[in-house]
Amino acid sequence: MTNQEIKIQYLYHSGFRVEIKNYIFIFDYFQGNVCLGEKDTIVFSSHGHPDHFNLQIFEWEDYNPNIKYILSHDISIEQKKENIFVMLPYDEIQVDDVKIKAFGSTDLGISYLIHYAGISIFHAGDLNWWYWWQDVPDEIAKAEVQFKAEVAKIKGESIDIAFFPVDPRLEHKYCVGADYFIQEIAPKVLIPMHFGDNLEVSNRYAERMKDSPTRVIRIAEKGQEIIL
Image 1: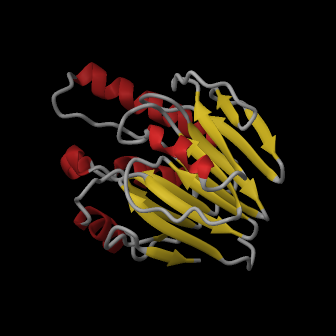
Image 2 (image 1 turned 45 degrees about the vertical axis):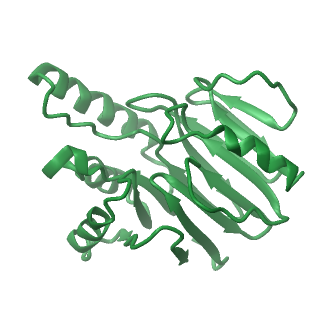
């Protein structure tokens, strides 16, 4: 990671605002207060689930004309505009100085890897090792195989900051996906997400990983600002 200052604001659930140098990146806005600013802005939506995508993002163009949208292929919108880009898994595009590669998901949509100003950011969307207790053993085994296969496609990428689910609905399996991602990918920083109002799970995971080479950030409140 370069010595470029990175400002990250936790919005809610899997939503984050990231400000680096000349750009603002907004990931999976669902709800929360977000400051748009006047910098060039790229808004990412990993898939169409209502806890990751809100049509309100298209209203932001009224306040900042320097805005572009990167959408997963499953999101259906009527408007076709030059500032809207739709991506399939493993697509790669460049938007001005920003390189973007899409990876797959173990649910709906895609995940994103962004390179800008010497910094790499990964947002998992709904890519996770989903361990649902009501599933039969065959389904649980299939979920593990699918997740590990997708992580294998990411392996070899150098990732500075990863936003990754730690979902309390999975009970004591809440962090198996994040654990495996850290084991295989070794991001420098991992920021937990996808826990709704259950902020405690973020603190629990940060405490669990306090001796890990990957720094795990504690999320304590909506709107929290993290400086890296």
